[in-house]
Every structure is written in C-alpha cells, then in structure tokens.
Image (tube, rainbow, N blue to C red; front, side, top):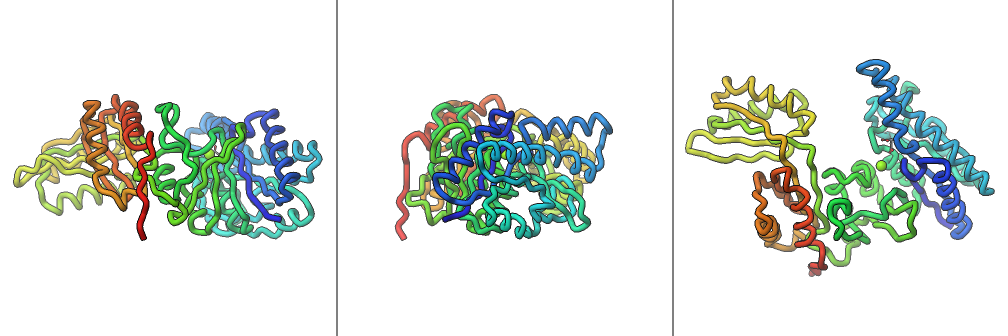
Length: 412
Ligand code: ASP
Ligand code: MG
C-alpha cells in the first residue's frame, strides 16, 4: 500500500458541484488502489483575488500580516467543504489548517518559505484511516502568525508535504490535462508532453507558463518527489516531471514559451567604459529592479547602446532612474519600448545538438519577424520580437520544432 498527495487547484474546487466531483475522484481512487491519500486544496476560483481586492478597497496598502490573515481564509473554506463532501461519500476525512498540519515558514508575510513540516498529526490521521485535507498556500511562522507562500503557492504546499511524508507521488490536478509544448490557446497544434524534466519545467514555469509554481518544481527535484500534472475533469495520464536521466529520448526542443509582460529600456551612446556599465546596473540592483536580458549594439569605438529588459511593472520606475543617470554617465538619452515580447525555445536536447539557433532564426525570418535581442543558455534560446508578432512567432516555432518528433538519442 502506498501514499500519494493530490492537490486540487482553484477551478477544481470552484463550486459545490466541482467539490463533490473532487470528493468522488479521491474516494474512488482510495477504494480502487487501497493507497492512502493526503489532499491539498487551493481557495475556490477567484476567492483569493476577491479577498485581495477587499483589503485594497479597505485601505490602499494593506499591512502584509493582516493581508495574510485575510487571504489564508480562502483555503480554509475549501478544506472544510471538501472534507464534508468526502464524508458524504462515506470516506473518513478531516480538514487541516497550516497550524494543524505543522507547516512552519519564515517570517516573510505574503511570500513566506516553508522551513519545516511537523507531520505527526497528519500521519496519525492517515493511520486512523482518515483522508487529511490540508489548506495549501498558508503556513505559520515562529511567532505563531499566519503567513502565505505567494500566489500559486498551494503547489508548494503539496510537494513539500509529499516530501515530508515520503509520498510515492504528488499529483497536481488542474483545469488542463498536462503540460503542452506551448500554450494551446495560442497554438492549437501544441502537443501534450508525456514527460518533461525538472530543468525544462523550471524554464516553462518561470517563463510564464502557470501550470506549476517554480518552487514546487525545485522541491520535487531536491527531494525526489515524482510529480504529475493532470486534469480534474478529463481522464488521462497527464505529464510527469522527471529527472533528466529518466527521459529516454531527448527532443531537441521540448517547448516554446512566451512572455508579454516585459519592457525594453535602451540607453544610447553610453561611453564604453566598464565603470559606466557597473554604475548603471548597480543602481538598478539598489532599486530592486530585476533585469532579464541585456544586449549591446551600435559600438562605434567609444560609445555603445545598451538595452535591457525589465518587468512591465518596473519599467516606469526603471526609465526614470536611467534618465537621471544619463548626464552622470555621459550618455545621450534613454527610452522605453513596451511593445515587445520574449519568445523562448527550451529543451535539454540542445546540449547535444547544434544548429538550433539557426533553425529558430530561419523559422522567424520565414514570417518576416525581426529579432531585437537574443540570449541563450545551455537549454534555452530566447529572442525579443515586436509584440504584434508574438502569436505568429509562437506558432511558427512550435511548428518548426515541436510538431514532428525531432529527437536525439544520447550516446553515453
Ligand atoms: N489561492 C492562492 C492563489 O490564488 C494559492 C493557490 O491557488 O495556489 O494564489
Ligand atoms: Mg496554480
């Protein structure tokens, strides 16, 4: 007999009929397999946003401690309703808040990190034949205050709990039936992946594919938790997130991701002196502005244009800071372009294969899409293109790399 953790996201518990559906699914699974199950739930769809809006309409800048007390209630509602629904099916079930489940975090309200799980109560409850239903997203800090783990944080609770309980697997149930080569809403030809490795999944999630919280993928990788993303509403195997060694064949490109929430700042005719660059980027860092890509163009022997991308939300602030620096740095001016999109191709198979970037540029050129910036890593090539082309770029790249199985067999 095994033990699994099953996590249900907001849409999966979005209303009472869905909660009954989830109860049915969990009850049947336990009956059929004889495995023990621990359930983790998110707040009902829209509830966390509603609570945040409520706080913001009360005061402009809610105190983080109070905000966490408020938003953590969403998950508590789901745990009790799902426990009731499970009991109505004839299962023994019991709800657990983070305090009851022994989930301790550090003190950073609204973005706390799990430090320890004292899982005795959960274990006792499993041993007594119960299905524990645990509130995702929340924790308790050293002072006994309620914290939350950041948006989408229930995934982290689920994987951390699976790690603590040494569960055989952690299933993340959501409204899609797995991880796709790219966003199926943008590209109907996107294909569902049976397997993807942790590193690729981390790129997928940090590049804006919202299926899994990146920290949950880190936990799964660090604690060897077999992790699966699957649909609550449609039967299917879902996508397993596995170790790179467990991928038998490595596609060169596993998928195409995009972001449309970055902006490009360009500082023109910056003296090409290493001090100017270090001043520019240390001031950005001091202001807590996260820089993504950096490129240098138009070098004329003494001056150069530097462009970098920042999150849209930071761009007004970043531009102001750079404009103030222009005289001090001896540059000519600074401007911000918000009409950009970043498109990336991702795949661990790139490690063993050349010519990936050239195929990418050919595909983009065939649609006359100009590339404004480029960056690469061992398993990723990213480009910045004008925003109006982003959907075409995603479709073209998915078509070029992911529509037929280009795979490399790795010789060891
Ligand atoms: N309810 C929280 C949110 O909406 C946590 C989660 O759903 O994972 O962000
Ligand atoms: Mg989520």
